[in-house]
Image 1 (tube, chains in turn yellow, brown):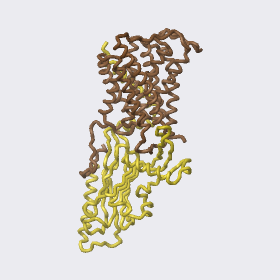
Image 2 (cartoon, helix red, strand yellow):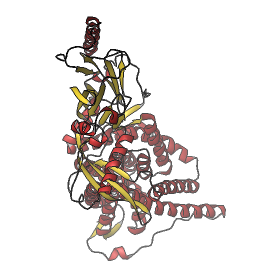
Image 3 (cartoon, one colour):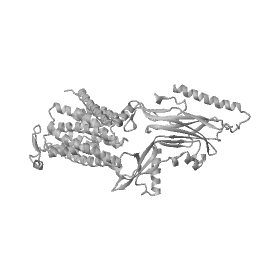
Image 4 (cartoon, chains in turn orange, green):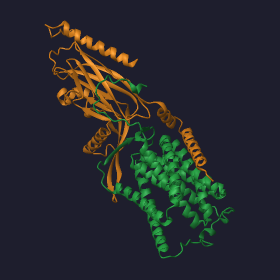
Length: 272
Length: 328
């Protein structure tokens, strides 16, 4: 089902762009009453984390409608893809040396931080648009939108705050949960583009928004959003849900399983 | 099925190799190689079969070294110890080596200790110090026990080389324990002593079980022999009896309070442990006791030093991040 749906969509998109090209061989600049628009979709809208889950890749693909791009070398348009995971509260901790050992001494809590954030574009983000635009559309690691909360915020100097913020981004990047790839959006032909996004094994579950922005000369012309859902599935989902929804029952079952395993082992190995 | 969506035939940029042995641990929230975890369970099971020790004090650090969050390692290992102590204590039970009354007194103390320990872990997780306290507890106990075992086994080896008999110290008849109130009669152990020392020992071991993910036999067995002066034939069976119930309580309490028990990880460890213990018990019959104990002591000290090293050496990354847990 899904395969057929996606292939049909791809075929329609390709045909559409080919026909648009065929209709206007002598008048490449179309009138402004047909503004550029972006159409896009994902290779999968649901990702299930099962026992063999070691990460996944999804492809975001789409096309620019009413494109005024004439030659095959892309350059007129920028496409920026942002994938944002569910928001979470993160505690960042800093170790200092106390009595010879490294101990967490300072901590800072950040609210509203995306659990996952991938940003892909055709070129460096600073060349795509001004800071004003990037901030308005929350694009880039400078505009993740997370803010420190709690009582020790005031005590931290501005540079201390920056250290913590940088650390969160650095660690999330190392875990593969924050991604910035300025060569991540690839044009295929004039108007067709695709971007491959890595979803690592440690990805937080929940509802994800994938936003695709079409820009020209630093202005956002069009924006398309698709939802992506990442959830634990199968036995893993069952175990995870049981552990958090029925923690007491889960513990009792864990003990019953262990006692049964012990009894089974001693029955199997008893030789006297 | 939804994870098997077509990828449009496009080449994957970062082609991760998928091993059929990779399993995802739902509570630890990471994928591990099934064979590595089975092998670790088997190796520790082999050692515990060979030396007749529980193995929790080796397994928990190994899990931490392999990237399992320390709080998950501790709670999950407690779950595994339930299985290994059930099969161990059944064998002792058949030989009539369990003092149920003494075990029950130790157990009451153990439950109190477990409740305190699990609450302590909860608070430590909230303030971000749980990893440190688990590591420090291990460094302390592994250091003390490793050194004591090494000294004892080296002395034993020397005695054997000198041709003398391997002396077994006979406990004396009276000590300060006998001055305490709340006296109880323990027929099976042929003791008439206060219930307070076993309650206290049980509570201490329960606390260690909750914080370190160990059965605590390495503390309880010497305490029963040297402090309570129990006959050595009932010591192992009685401590295993107590360990079943205390680690069960720790498993349930950690599940209910901290949601840190990973049953999938525990099950893999149980399977590896059972198989390993069988081979270990057979291998142990062909090796000399003193040399085995010296070997185990060196291993314990090795794990201790590794943990100490991780605490003392400046980490590459001074920052760490984690989810905000309730409270504060």
